[in-house]
Image (cartoon, rainbow, N blue to C red):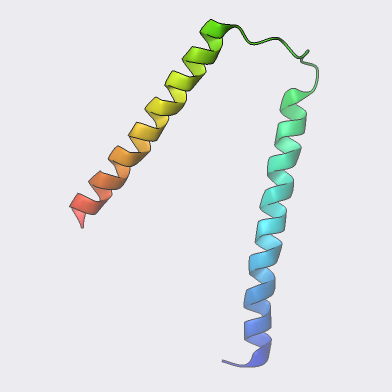
Length: 70
């Protein structure tokens, strides 16, 4: 492996991270556009917390399933 290939690999990593960061930022900006900042009610807050916990449990279950499948 020559120096040029190593430099290209490293540059590809940084460029990919930069592009992904930019796409994520742009998507968030576009998604927020036109929406007024609405106050969050306690019911909505508890529901979002519950949804986050459920998603976390689902990710852990998927990881365990992958581990078992090996």
